Amino acid sequence: MIPLLHDFTDETVLVVGGGPVGARKARRFAREAAVVVVSPDFADREFGEVDLIRAAPDPDEVDGWLERTDPALVVAATDDEAVNDALEAAARDRGILINRADRAGERDAGSVVVPATVREDPVVVSISTGGTAPALSKYLRQELEETLAGAGEMAALCDELRSALKSQDVAPKRRREIVTDVVNSPDVWTALRSGDSNTRQVIEDVLGDELPPSGGERA
Ligand SMILES: C[C@@]1(CC(=O)O)C2=NC(=C\c3[nH]c(c(CCC(=O)O)c3CC(=O)O)Cc3[nH]c(c(CC(=O)O)c3CCC(=O)O)/C=C3\N/C(=C\2)[C@@H](CCC(=O)O)[C@]3(C)CC(=O)O)/[C@H]1CCC(=O)O
Ligand SMILES: NC(=O)c1ccc[n+]([C@@H]2O[C@H](COP(=O)([O-])OP(=O)(O)OC[C@H]3O[C@@H](n4cnc5c(N)ncnc54)[C@H](O)[C@@H]3O)[C@@H](O)[C@H]2O)c1
Image 1: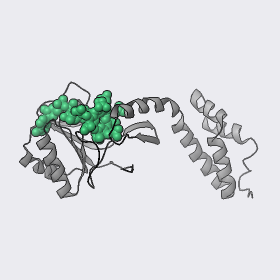
Image 2: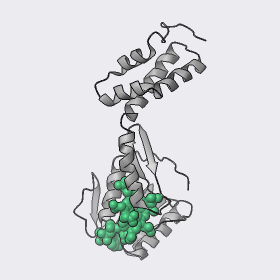
Image 3: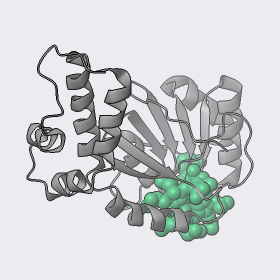
Image 4: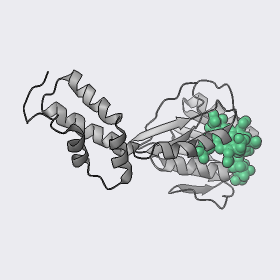
């Protein structure tokens, strides 16, 4: 399986099943999508800003929910295998992505896995164990949270630096060298992680007199 990124902005995600797993998936997608959770009961968990709908569709009723909510992704998170089977079949027929929380291993096209995710916006890292050990995915996610500290600020810094270098017509090869040096600089990481650094100041500290005067061309 190969990870891809999907933008759920302005999309709906339908989560069926309101247990702890449904709650976790709802929270995850609510950061970006409009989430509808359908379940006869809801666990005492945080679901995020979502629509909770009390209903327990039978297998022959699930297609109607897909038709009404028109989701980009369906999460089958009930403890009823027949309902999860029916959700998968209906999603496949409609060409909608399906995530089955009760299955690991090989998948048909359109059946997707939700990986553990570390966010340092705009940086995102996903972890999967091929379904063999979700608890390990969670453990590694927690470990990586520390490693990635400051990565979001580093991305913002590189973005600003690239724009500055481009606007001053620094040659592409030299731009690449400078940005690579910055990303590899322990001093820059330390400055970003200390939290009290100002991006402009970091760029100046790192580049010293490297940045050419405005409009200057460098080889
Ligand atoms: C990463 C994470 C993302 C998320 O869900 O948000 C996620 N599971 C998480 C936690 C977790 N899941 C389970 C435990 C108990 C300990 C254990 O069994 O290990 C814990 C730990 C806990 O709860 O503490 C049990 C479990 N999970 C699946 C089954 C079904 C099966 O195996 O058949 C069963 C057995 C149920 C049973 O026994 O009845 C299936 C899937 N779980 C996946 C993802 C996909 C594969 C990811 C991968 O490749 O690693 C996959 C295939 C489908 C999917 O859900 O997309 C999230 C961590 C979030 C975080 O970062 O905190
Ligand atoms: N992917 C994962 O990370 C993971 C982790 C643990 C368990 N699981 C699997 O996911 C399933 C859900 O886990 P859980 O701990 O939240 O289970 P749970 O039993 O606590 O919750 C299941 C929810 O589904 C609801 N439900 C039952 N029938 C329904 C229907 N017809 N329509 C809508 N909702 C219905 C129940 O009322 C309940 O709220 C489990 O059966 C297990 O197989 C997956």
